[in-house]
Image 1 (spheres, rainbow, N blue to C red):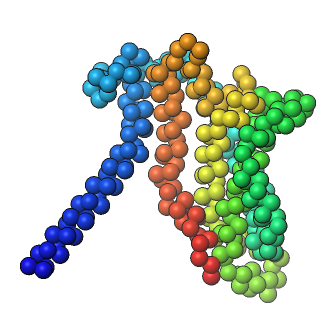
Image 2 (image 1 turned 30 degrees about the vertical axis):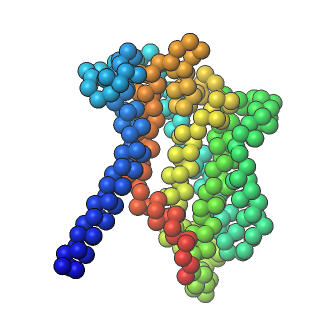
Length: 277
């Protein structure tokens, strides 16, 4: 009787657990499901609950997205800005985070954390004034610089605890063999820091890819990014829901693909510095 009661309690707990997980999963994924479904609806069906799941699918929104709104250019702009800003940030942030970790530069680390905590919107007015003075508003170079100001401290913030978790004995052994610190960093530390570097790269790229605030102020007709292009579907008198949903799917799909294929590296990179030694 006791064994039966215990088994029944385990079944009830297991059922409750999975039911809770599925409810939370549905609540989290429903906006994305609604967005994807809405991208195949007509404008008249968009806000009508009668056509929530039952409707005649059409690819009209996607056709107009690339024919009438020239969405290829914003995709290319976002990719260039996100990729270059991430690569340049890595080149500067990896040596900096290694130096902070190995030489115990606590004050520098604190300053970077403060910069990381400052809302990025506070930089926009000074940036716009400076970029206008140097003539780099509506240029890829200007947007890349703006994104790097946020990406740099973010990558350092991720990589410092990762480097701190690596044993110093590796570098000491290399030094005994005559290797310089810089050479040890390039040939020993960086190769075994793959998970942390991949994590920092992905999160930095996703930040740049999704960033709207910098683009709306510092970009223009030439360098319009995807989030700014999507904002163009909203006007004073009307909202093009079909184009808005289709454009949102185009922005979201690459991020989801990257996250699905590289999620194990992201988790490993974020947790690598949690335990030292």
